[in-house]
Structure formats: C-alpha cells, structure tokens
Amino acid sequence: METINSLLYQVGAILKGYAVLKQNSQDHFNIFKILQMQSDEVRLHSTLLAELLNPRGSHCKGEAFLEKFIATVTPSQCKEFNCRHTRVTAEKFIGPISPDQTQGGRIDIYMEDNVGQVILIENKIYAGDQPKQLLRYHNHINEKPGTILYLTLKGDDASGDSKGHLVEGKHYSRISYKRDILRWLDECHQVSSDAPVLRETIKQYSDLVKHYTGQTTDKKLHMDIRETLLLSPQNLTSAYYIASNFKHAKHALLKEFWSEVAEKLRKELGEAYDVYFKENMDKNYPALFVNERSYFTQWQVQFVLEPLNGKSSWMRNCLYYGIWCNHQKAEVQQVHTKLLKLFNQKTKNPKWWLQLNRIGDLDFGNISTLKLVLPGTQEREELQEQIIKTFQAYILENAALMKKLVEILKPVENVAQASTGATY
Image 1 (tube, rainbow, N blue to C red):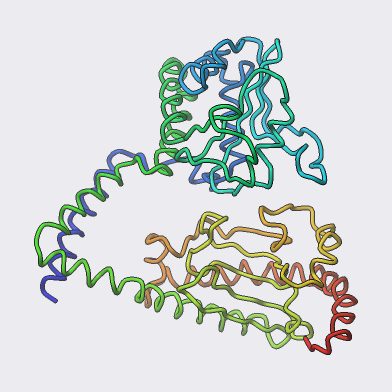
Image 2 (cartoon, rainbow, N blue to C red; image 1 turned 30 degrees about the vertical axis):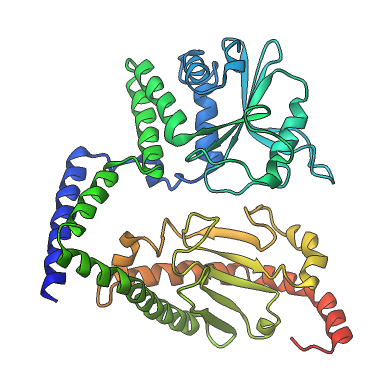
C-alpha cells in the first residue's frame, strides 16, 4: 500500500505541474469547445474549412488560403487549379440518392474553378461512411479533371462499402487533420498576421484540431507519466494493480450513480411511467429506458438516455437522450418511414433514433465527468438534478408524440401477435 501511495503522489505531482502550465498558457479557453461544436462535422468543420477556402469568403484574404491549400495539401493533378475564379460550396446537394445508391447525396465541400476543374472533400470526424458514398461522388464528377479528397482525423482510408472499385491515388486521395490540415492552418495563420480576429480564430481552431489528434501538451504529460511508471519495479507493480482495478472501481461508481438517478426519476414521473435501468457498465450503451406502463412492455419505441458509461461509437461518447425505436423488430421496419415523418430532425442514426438531443458535453468515460460523480459531493447532487430535470422535461413534453408512435405501431404489432401467438 505504501508503494501505491508513493506512486499516486508522484503522478499527482506531475499532473499538478501540467495543470499550472496549462493555466498560465490560457490555451484551455476555446470558443468552439465552449459552444460544444467541436465534433460537429457540418456546422463547424466543413463550414469553417469551406469559408477559409472560399476566395469570396468573409476573411477578406481573397484566394490566399486556397492557394496555400492547393500548394500544401492537394495532389499534383490539382496544381493548375484557378484559385481566383473558384466557387466553394459547403454541403452541396447533387440530387436524391438513387435506389442503387450510385448517384446523389451531399458533398461536404465542393470546389470548382472557371474551367471546370473540381476538388471534392469528404470530411469525416466521427461519422461512419455511407454505402457507396465515395463512388457516388466519383460518378458525379465523371470525366471532369480534379480529385476527391477523403479527409479524416489521422488519414484513415474509406471503407470498401463506400469506395467500391475506386483506387486510392487514382480516383481519390487521403488527407488528414493531423498532418495536412494543421500544416495548412499554420500557413493561414501566418497569412493572417495583420488581421487579429481572423488570426486568433484560426489559432483556436488549430488548437482544437491538435486536441483531437493528440498533439497538445497532454502528449508530453503522458510521456512523463510513462517514465515515472517505468522508473522502478515497485512503481511498475503499483501501476499494474491500479490499472487492473480502475475499471472495476469506475463501473461500481457509475452503477451506484445511475441507480440513484433511476430511482429519483421514478419518483418524479410517478406511477404512470416505468423506468428500466440497463446497468451493464462493462458493455456498450448501458441506458435508462422510460415509457408509460400501458405500453412499456412492447419495447418497440422508448424514451432512452445513454450511454451511461461513456461508450458510444457514433456520438463521441457524450450523454444523449431521445426517442429510440427497435429496428431489429420486423414491425418497426414495416412502418419506419411513417414513424420518421413525425419528426423534423434527421439523426445520424435514423434506423434506431427518431429524435436525439445531447446533455451538455458529458462523457462518463472521461475523468473530468467521473470526478463529478464521486459520492458525498455537491457536484454529484447537482449533476443528477440536471440530468433528471432535462430528461423528465423531454419525456413529458413528448408524451403526445409517443402516443402517436404507439398508435402507428399497434396495428402491425397486433398482426404479428395474432400470427405468432406471441405476447408483448
């Protein structure tokens, strides 16, 4: 126990030193993080990149940024691009997606000069590829000179389902935020030296990209901690036992926290509602399921809050809530289009989520959030109150909408029940 306490003290001293360094640098202030836009591919990343690339953009730097992009990022076949006479469009609509998925869609960033050369950028931060997505974009430009750039955080390749027969280097090129976009932003930052607001906006965006690609002071912090863990056999042994038990401690902490949330939510909603706590904290998507008792057991549509442990592959691990439908059920598949028509929002995963909202930037796999969950603290009580108040309000506001969904599902459920003899 003494060696474990010693190791914790050493690591704590390192963390304290870096906290002071970060405080003095003031790099922790970032307007994009404050507005919770950091992972929004459309409203932040594609929109901002398109604005900087646009020769007619509000930055008043003309084609300077686009010229730097062509020089530092694009492959050789784009070097003759006429930057001065280029039109840049974010989220360009190229028609409805065809039944065979080989035509149509929306291109994240579309650039075309006055002689018909094109550069298309498919921007992927966290969203997965769509079926035949790159193939659709390739078919759209057809014989036009130019290229498709597949942009990801670290230069990952497109999935086979997206690119089909397309060959990297011939039909499209991979670029990354980690190398290409950061290098280009550095060039833009230098060009903007005489424009303070523009210069600092580019710097803050560059800092955000560095954060997501592991190029902040955190990298040096990790190296220092690693050296401390490997400093002696005693430190290494202590680190092993801490690491072996941390996951179990975290799961126990979260299970207790969410059990309390579920119980408090039951009391707030009253006997008309059932609250089910799916408590498998070591799996993906542990959740709270809520619905009226009169149709809760049907399990086809639910009010859901997840992931309670910060494990989500498609929403950057943030806590979110909304109306979920069980798309594995044949009854849901039959009326899915009809269900979606009741919603104005199109979610990132419409097969399963008819409507979706996020609660702040809470990630229950992140240490910053986990510290708020520790028992006996005011922060814990306030966090539970915030979550319950937000989720409860949403449930009550959408009770009538949920009733309409159940009414749409009821006829097909009755048919399924009659044909199989099953009960719901």
